[in-house]
Length: 279
Image 1: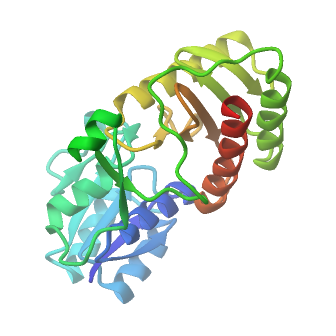
Image 2 (image 1 turned 180 degrees about the vertical axis):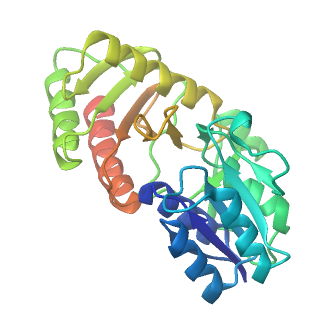
């Protein structure tokens, strides 16, 4: 069992990384939010790898890494800076991921550094892209999503009209309220169907652009999780889930809400939206 310590003051981020490593199989992950806590956790856990955010408080990060290696000479380190320029010269590290980054990049980098675990991978299921591919038994293997059933992945767009718009908007508003009034938006391509709470036109456009780029860049599956923002003050977690056709339901969270809770709430609303638009 590989041991990984995630040293980051952003608890939602650290929790997400730890959960992802656990779901990959073969990893034990623990969290630390400060320099002193990182030293204490390393002493007890004796991790194979530590992921360190450049903004880790109550410490000088290069000095901290040196201190950790005094007791754990073989310790591998992944640093999360804002840019390559934030990496101190001569610092011995095994990996760098600059902010923001596509979330799966970090677990994949950890696998690359430590090697593929011998444990089994998460449960997967088969989603054919269309009937022809289904007949040929080709398609995409993705992690089994949270929820009672797979959402429909359709090639054709769905229709938003006067009959279903009010219900759609109600679901989005309710989801925002359940997530402490954090921004929730439903998009169709680059078009915003509805957003709650109401944002300025520029803010809504900027968030829509982020959602669109994140969705276009994801490799497979029906959800996207990544962290956005160019500083700690602007950093937020973006979570997007495909609803049906080309509809995407997204949330942008700055508050600390456990990821399982976020996924469950978004999934439930996505299923309600699917029923509303598809019948």
